Every structure is written in structure tokens, then in C-alpha cells.
Length: 247
Image 1 (tube, rainbow, N blue to C red):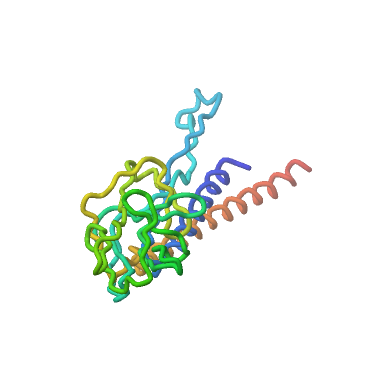
Image 2 (cartoon, rainbow, N blue to C red):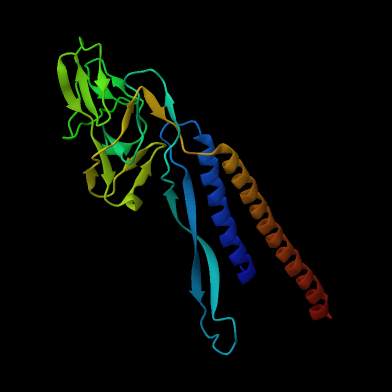
């Protein structure tokens, strides 16, 4: 493969990745607690050998999809009236205990399991400040959850929902649409600002994402046209050279 086509192919692969990420954002526009994902591009420089006598041809720079990251701004809080739905108005994440281990999430669609364990919509227990599940009694019909996560009934406090912040937010690794692996130590958030009876929506802005998708698609098409034009140029050159060499 020639250099021009190689460079264009690297851009096509990176642009395809960008479109995939944007499409996933659009698909999760209504997913509670979802954070918009972005692609970080970088240059990958290929040092060319034996080019010291050719000015300007020492290196070749390829497009590279280096990493992805999540935008941190919170989503819109919508009140649902369900006393077990919880939203975070500030920083931090709830901790749930999945079969694969503890995970962080801002998806606060919680509710009690048949045994009284407070859990998320997938049945994963919500953990308290000590990393333990929270148990709600069968007779606890009036449950109040305060801003600091304290869970109370008319008989008193039965636990405190833990809200934590990772020491290195860039170490978070997405697992599914709303869960994250911490990737390092976490610390308790002093004032989590929990809102009872509400859900934090996705922070995706659909209009902006559709506009971004259209721009990504145009760029992909432009690079595709470049590859096609380069292929036609090479074929025309071969067609002209073959008769000359045959004569």
C-alpha cells in the first residue's frame, strides 16, 4: 500500500471510531446517568529511514485514535416521585456490588429486593459508607433519604448510602452504559447532595450529537473520495506506462 493510501486509511479508521462513539451517545440520550463519550485523537509519527537528503520527508504522520474519555457535567435531574429513585446533584458516584465486584454509577434507579436489600435495576446491591448492603425492613413503609445519604424510617436511621469520588477520574473505565470500574482508590464525598425521588438523566445533548454525526460522516466521505481519487490516479498512470513499456 502506498503512503498516501496508508495515511488516508489511518484517518478513515479514526473517523469510523468517532462515528461509532457519537452513535453510542445518541443511542443513550435517554439512559439515566449516562455520560457523553468523546474520542481523543493524536498523531503517530513514523520515522522514515534513509531520507536525510530529502527535505521535508523525514517523518510520516498518521491519525491515531489514542483514547476515549467521558464528559463530567451532570445531566438534568427529573423528579419521579419514587422514594427509592436517587439523583446526585454534585460530584461522585454511588457504589453497587456486581458479580464482577464493586462498580461506580450515577444511575439512581434503586428499589428494594424481595429480601429488603436496596438494589439497582439489575439487582445489584447498593453499598453504604462501609461497603455493606443496605437492608430495608418489610414494615418500613416510610423511607426518607437525606442529602448526605442517610436512610431513615419512623423507627430511626437504618444506614447511609455511600457516595465516592475516584482519586483519578481519568482512570475510570466504562463497563456498560452507566457503570464504571474505579481503576484506583476512591474517597468518600463529604456533601454528595442526594435528591430523593429523582433521577439524573443523560448529559447527552441530542441536537449537538446529531450535528457532530453529520460532520463526522462528511469527513469520512471526503477521505473516502480521496482514496478513490488516488486509486484512479494510480490506475491511469499504470495504463499509460504499460503500452509505453510494451512498445
